[in-house]
Image 1: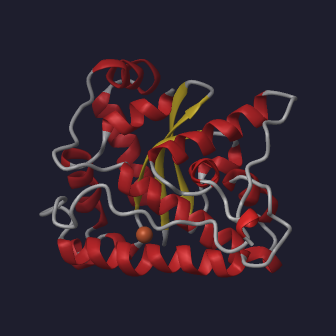
Image 2: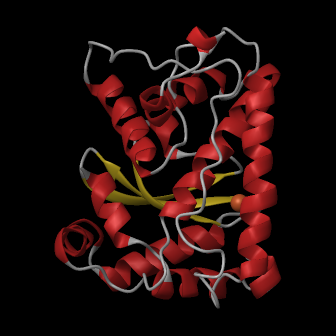
Image 3: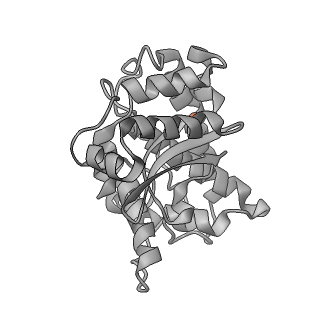
Length: 245
Ligand SMILES: [Fe+2]
C-alpha cells in the first residue's frame, strides 16, 4: 500500500498543509482557468488526504478578540471534524484520486449525492485558510502593496472596512466573507455555508469565518463587534500579500 501514500510534496500541493497549500491550490485553479493546457494532476491518497495542521500560533495568542475557549473548540472540534469527515467521505473513492482541492470542489458542488465530500473538503480548506488569515498583533490599515491595491481597487482602507464589514455582517446565517483577487483586482465577497471562491476561479487573499461557532462564546449575537475587532486586531495582511502573488 505504500505506493498509494502521497509524498510530502503531494500533500503540500494537494491538500491542506499550510500557507503553501492555500497558494498552490489557488494558483493551480487560476492557471487551470486561464491556460488551455491543464496542470499536472495532483495525487490524493485514498486513505485520507486532508490534514489537520497545528495552529500557526498558540490557542491563547488571539485573545482577547478570540478567546482560548473559542479557538480551542473551533480548531479542535469543528475543524477537526471537517478533516475527519472529509477523509471518511473520500476514503476508498477512486473518483477523486488525482484531483486537486479546487477540482474536487468543482466536481462535487451542487450534487446532493456528493454533498459530504463537497462540504467537508471545502470546510477543511476554509478553516485552514482562516487560521492563516489572522495573526497576533495584526489588523489595521495595511502598508505597501496591499495598501496601494486597497486604495486603487476599493477606494481606500475606510471604504474597504465598510464594504468588508457589510459583507461579513450581512451574510445571512452561516458563511464567510472574503477579500479576493479577480485577475489581479481586489474584490470583497461573501459565501454561504461551505462555499468558497475557488470554484469561481477567484484567488482568496484573506477570509473571516462568520459561522456562529467562530464568535458566539466571546461576542454572543454581536457579530458586528467581532468583525470590527477582527479587522482592527487580527487580519494578517502579510498573508494577503503573499496570496496576491
Ligand atoms: Fe468555523
